[in-house]
Amino acid sequence: MKICVGLSGGVDSSVAALLLKRQGHDVFAMFMQNWHDTEGTLHGDCSWEEDRFVAELVARKIGIPFYFIDLSKAYRQRVVDYMFREYACGRTPNPDVLCNREIKFDAFLSAARKMGAEAVATGHYCRRSVARDADGRMLFDEDGNVLYSLQEGVDPNKDQSYFLCQLNQEQLRSARFPIGDLSKAGVRRIAAEADLPSADKKDSQGICFVGKVDLPVFLQQKIAPKEGDVVEVFPAFYPDCPQWNAQRGILQDLLLPGRELRMTTPQQPEQKILTSDGAPLGPSPFDAGRIAALGDEQLKTLSEPIPYDFSFQTETYRSGKKHTRKTRIVPNPHAMPAGRHDGAWFYTVGQRKGLGIGGHRESLFVLATDSEKNIVYVGEGQDHPGLYRRCVRIAPDELRWLRPDRALQPGQTARLRVRIRYRQPLQGATLIQRADALYILFDVPQRGVSAGQFAVWYDGDALLGSGVIA
Image (cartoon, rainbow, N blue to C red; front, side, top):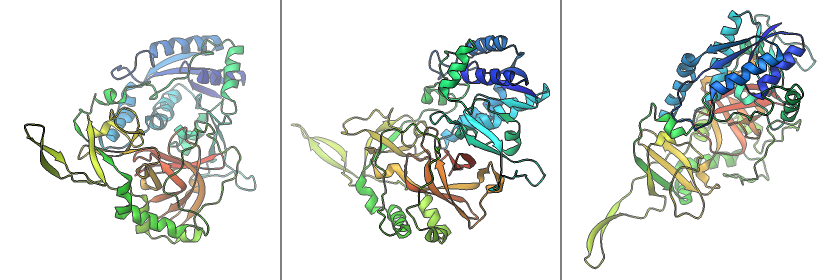
């Protein structure tokens, strides 16, 4: 088979090319340049000239043809401009997911096919296999095409299936992931034994093809700074918040007997296990029948973020020996202005660094942003109730089933594992499909959920679908 390898100059794609060559395929390499600008990128990161040089050396060492392609126009239009639009609306995008859907397995795939390639290969840590039913029979779509499954990589600390969550069956049919059955250490070992020039190259970081960036500086290429208020929300606000109480009441009614309702999740030391690791999915703390009987309005209430809208009164007072007349804000038990910022769109939910506000015993975290009013809401401590959500909503036009045969129909529910960001261990959840949206009810409260993030769900080690959180 003639296969085009997206050779980046890194060790993963290098070993992918080497393995395919050893398997007897007709392999050629193509290096993508997708970004030219350096504004906002940190010095020394993502030097594409060096990457191209290393990639060409690798191709020469393996003995495969090497080509160069500039996809920067498509990348800017379909990935970077999307990123700017999302941040400007106060959402948190994942450009790496879009890069795979729009560039590597679309624009790049099209270019590779014009050069005779039947498939494209990358250095992702994931696996592709033929989809089968419970009896082991191959599955086909309505047109008679074989259905494929995208599975986690075997390395529990390197699974990258999350980044491929938006692929469709046609794209997956043309994809190859040669290192999905290997660990990172194994890939390094193969590269060293073959004396590949990329064997000791460090892994890339930051935005796909752009590199590590100073995000506010990078975004200021298109989004102008604008000073606004930072408002600190106190925990005392939530017991007086109608929506928070409504959510708590619904969740309480769903609980199985003997289960305790938690609105926050105690923070544990960071886990490194990304895969399901063969462990069975535990039981839900909620009654399945009551979940299925939830009304659409109840689900909507559960899935909506807590609204913040505070007004502060001022009072005048006299200060000092000269009794100078001054104005101050009247203390409010729910919230108080805490500082200033340069633009709400430069912040994301769960963010801790970059606020520049002192005088607190614990760190401040971003709870929400209002891009229209240009307000950033923050809370003190990682157990702040405003940091957590139990349910999220996926709009129909943002929902993608990589396995269309497993798509839920209105009224159906499913117990699956879900993650809302890369590097997050998989979370137990119940998916609830309704005519207006797909709802995801998590077994435990989720920290730092932001609109624009991709929620991705798995059955065992197979990725079934994904969607953008509303």
